[in-house]
Length: 189
Image (cartoon, rainbow, N blue to C red; front, side):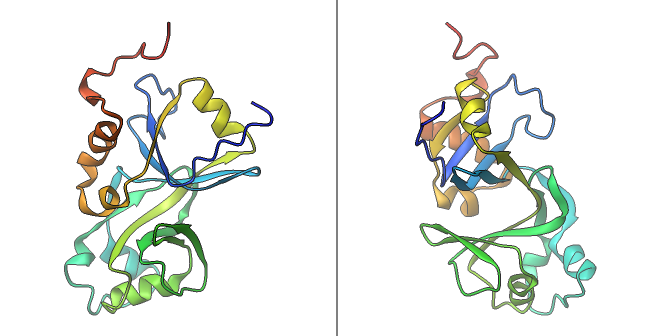
């Protein structure tokens, strides 16, 4: 697909049922950045057993005013840099290391955002993950062309206001598809 200018930033990637890669089976991934160098996304529907309070302890942040947020699960964001925290949040705010995605969303990798969350002064909406999904130049376009993913423009509210287990079916509904009826041979004529 050389010369293609497809840009999937701010889109959801919905893994097709035949997705062989166990990292992405039944995954809903939010694409934070997509350009000629490749793409970066966060899997947003795979909460782990680790709670935010445990992550705060690991990085020496006192969960002072985090309140209920401390009981929020940390998500598996993807297979790259799984020891590193990625915070998808809105509003964007002013943090040390933030990728402004658009629509008021940011992806921050610096510790200051988590310190603010722990103090109760962080962004209104946060989704904390360990790791991210990455694609080299042209790789995502190729996978989409091979029917590995369905794509749909993302709804930021779905990220923060829908429970993790309901995000994939909700993203499917954005496409007008009932996930339970999607079979392995969709897209093959």
